[in-house]
Length: 466
Image (cartoon, rainbow, N blue to C red; front, top):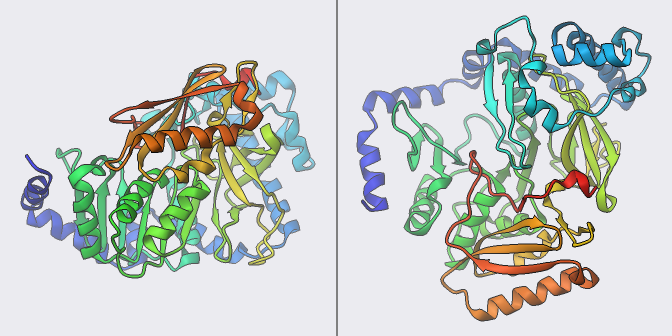
């Protein structure tokens, strides 16, 4: 069955009652929608975020100290892992005098959480009473996360606060690129349209379906488009390579969940003729931030959690996070694996006393390893020079050797291969003697369970090389 026929059948199979209910839901006042789906916790956080948005540094510091102390007391009393940890090292939250006391606690690794998820959950309630989520394993370490309804509501309040910076509201016309679309027993649907939302499945961003997605997007006429950077780049490349015009003037393209590389930002902005606005968050509910409305610097919400920075590879710093909103499964001094550059204590553009970063550069897993254990500088920035490549991914299984997997476009030729090899040698410089990178052509690059595409499929244990 052709793609167009699939779309037509899907439209016909959607019951009138189902579509009518979704339309009514979307057209309800914003406050009613949040009250039904998020409860009063949403409004508490939204009000607090507005009140505290321009607190000074000292007031935020006092707030974070009290929140950290309360979280640690809860963890000691109700979470098995922390109860044992605090007992073993003689740590007493009630004796904390400043945030510096937190440094006596060890960092929390992803492996520890993955191997003992039940030990991190509030023991006063059964696991089935919490929302259960799964990380995609983009670092090679998938995890099970438990979240309370209150924490879920808090996330939506922070998201609403953040996207208000670019004029987004629940009533905005929005196209979303999503991993999986399901309604009842119908799974893996190509799209769904209800009210002012059009959701397109990224599973269908190939071949003939790309043209259909583009036509639907144009007809829908959105104000915002949101999705993973990797998926947005596929659509952007299609638009540019076919010399197509984007939809009417968009207010912004919103990216989330994956690292946004500068070459991706340029490609998406060129295709859609608008700014890219990047969010930063994680399933673990430990940290949340997003760009300033006056620049591309990332603001970290001090109300959402405590952000520490530790020195890492190549002059980068790694984010260590302690989240304030999810008492169900607290993450305390959690090593995120996310690397940042250009750190500042506040933003001179907007006046908020938020920690800011010039860029979140990716993850430790994004590095390659030379034959003697050297860390190879990340090669992502030059990928924009591959005009006839649909998708790509580095794969490394042994030090000193890696593969660049490429899904070729129709216009790809041997000249492109020669050009890519030249650029690899140029970017590696003297390091080219430490690693051999072989180009291999593939028909498909596997996504993670949530639909993400890893830039580097790193099979080595990076802890041995840091």
